[in-house]
Image (cartoon, rainbow, N blue to C red):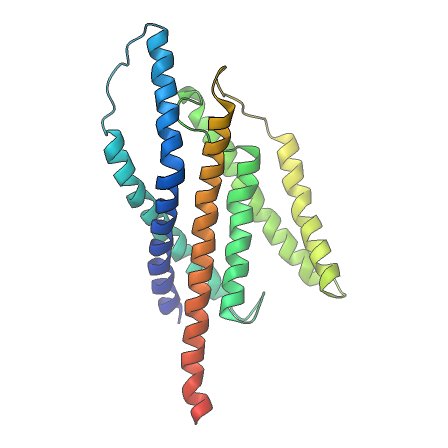
Length: 241
């Protein structure tokens, strides 16, 4: 069964990655082009040369976008399938579709939304290359905070007696406490250069978050739909007998 789930996760993750790549191509790449144009105009206005040309041109980068999102989908799909196999029948909704949507939604909040709200994505021309290691480390820390907060929330909800509202309230509170503490304690990174268009920055960040939302929504729906369909097919002979 785990092998079947793993293959399903890989294939559907690849498909969801390509769907997300299409969204990023339509809504994100024009903002990247605008950011690059702004940077080039700034360099030319300062009388500096452009230095070495990019090894891969913009056309190649745009084509590679689908390769990147596809590989991302493969990796996430494989991990998701293993986590799903471990949770199936133990926690969460009993139906495969409901569990898939619950796990996908939780993963989006913990792994994507939590770090994004503290350290949102920046387009080209924003950020000091010399600080990229530190910024990456801080982003990874926020991902770990989101995952730990999720584990704490699930454990808290399982210990609380009472109805679903009491469990949900306890879970949300247990999740938010470490997340908000991390948001307050970790340093803020603001490297947006003076004069960079605020609208362009906002649109790029929305496109970046939207790409992840499209991926996790598509993947959760596809994985859940295929899982429910497989369960109905497997139950049909039993019902017929």
